[in-house]
Image 1: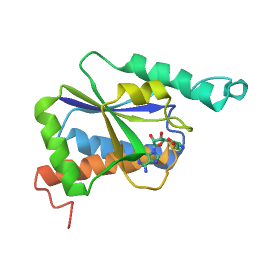
Image 2 (image 1 turned 180 degrees about the horizontal axis):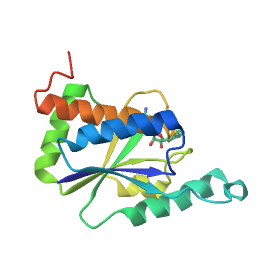
Image 3 (image 1 turned 120 degrees about the vertical axis):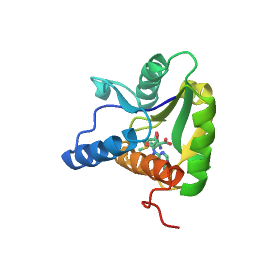
Image 4 (image 1 turned 45 degrees about the horizontal axis):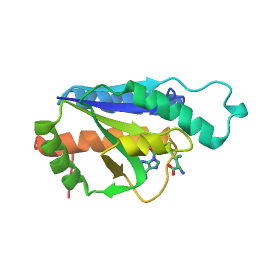
Length: 156
Ligand SMILES: C[S@@+](CC[C@H](N)C(=O)[O-])C[C@H]1O[C@@H](n2cnc3c(N)ncnc32)[C@H](O)[C@@H]1O
């Protein structure tokens, strides 16, 4: 079983790179986990928002492997408390080979990506940048793994 976080474009800010890297290492202590990056589109100025989402969507779908379970990170998705997210993760760990969490580009997902995904997960009703949500997600995944392993990181 492996967890993947699929993102559009490299993480650019130094402070995010460092903090995300820290949580990735901590998560790897518990489970196989990688961040996969879809290269940012070039010449986006000549594209409409919908065209950009469509092109990014094609690359997102191409990055998926047969048998993958894609989960879209989306502010309109299902919300969990951290302990509930841990229970949800535990169930997936027993039933899925590759669970691929996907963060959209700056304008979100194309209709084709929404169609391909079985689940949508919200980390808040508020909208975060596609760069910042990476850090929030890896912290929550680490928190979930800490809860499942009875580590004293999480306090209710
Ligand atoms: C700037 S947001 C895009 C907002 C766009 N209006 C939309 O409707 O998707 C970029 C990406 O960050 C992620 N994201 C932002 N806020 C989120 C939240 N509260 N929960 C989960 N994912 C979020 C989503 O993957 C989204 O596609």
